[in-house]
Image 1 (cartoon, rainbow, N blue to C red):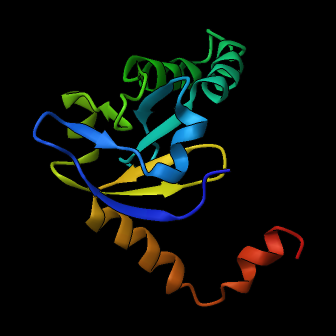
Image 2 (image 1 turned 90 degrees about the horizontal axis):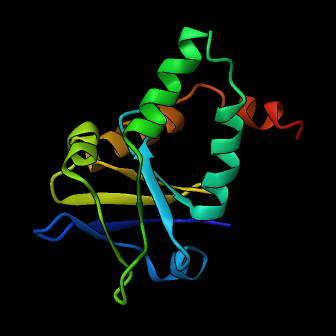
Length: 142
């Protein structure tokens, strides 16, 4: 399970150092692709295979499904972290997420999100300023 958020900086080659606590689960490889909120998502290889299988089952005749697959698969890149726990983030993905140097790396249970700091703060502000955060708990049946 990926938990917590960390501030990191991409190096001048566009490599992201994965937080040390996440590395053991990612040693076998990762897939990085665009998130749905102009962020990036990093999946462990085995989790990506499960997701890809579900995308494979989406009907080809459904334009929304085709477009979703095009975005998720067409932007995806696979990588194996190097000895320092770094992965290269393609220029195309960095542009999609508006990332240049500083990023927020946030664990989201089975995957990791990578955000431009201002975008991450905007998401947090939206949730924190909700008039009744108890609604989030109620949706979970708590």
